[in-house]
Amino acid sequence: MRYRMIGIDMDGTLLDRRGRVSEENRAAIAQAQAAGVVVVPCTGRAWSEASPLLRDVSGLDRGVFVGGAAVSEIATGRSLDLAVFEPHVAMELVDALFHLPEAVLVFQDAALAGHDYLVTGRGELSANTRWWFEFTKATPVFKATVTQEDLRHALRIGIVSDTGRMEAVTRDMRERFASRVVMQSFAAVQMPGTTGAMHVLEIFASGVDKWRGLRWLADQMGIEAEAVAAIGDEINDVAMIQAAGCGIAMGNAVPAVKAVADHVTLDCAEAGVAHAIRKLLSGAWG
Image (tube, rainbow, N blue to C red; front, side):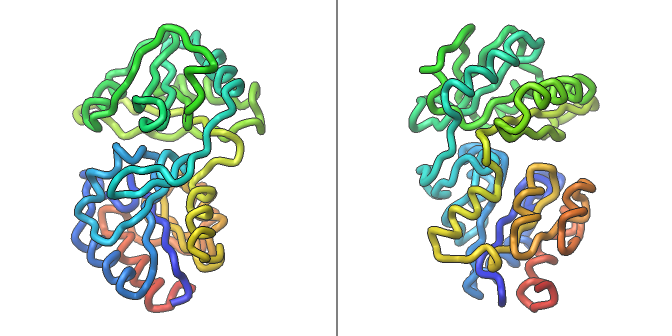
């Protein structure tokens, strides 16, 4: 087995369309671990949002969370590495989003800030965001205005809006901040029973993506980049799919992911992760 570490996205990849880890995926992960491979969940979710879904997957030790801004112990949530904004950059971003009709969502490390989300701005929380807070038991704090001191532990800044509005907002923010930050927009996890698509805009400090977190962990374990495989489906997986020794796109992946992948596996509804792991373990994909 050439690969010593496999980074696996969660939504649309490890999780099926019901938001669950299939028995087939769990069995394949156990098979990889038995072969000495370190399996690392790599997700845009925070640890608190992801950990309930990982409890039934045995042998997982550490994960990459918040889109690569945090590397944490899965059992405890203790952060091992954080990539926060410089407070003045975070303040500029909040100011740029402040006037929008959507609330500004500042995700922070709860152990340092005392809460998960700092919610600010003139806008309102979408119904989708309120559902997400309740569903994940996130701890939001609401402040009408914020200072740089409030933003000292900011890992991610963004908004949630309908698809049409998000295109214009993302374009404007890219023009204003260019290469100073990492910015991506993609479909949000949808509130059950809704039909209108919602998008998230996520902004990170410069250089922050899932590969940053996965590479940091690999370096700590003495694993070279060429010995890391990565599996994902969304735009926030592109960096790790492209940089890993073997990048694998899900069958349901967006075109940008498939364009940079070495291989394409099955759909998330067909246990595509298990299929990819079997290919890697057999040496068919190497």
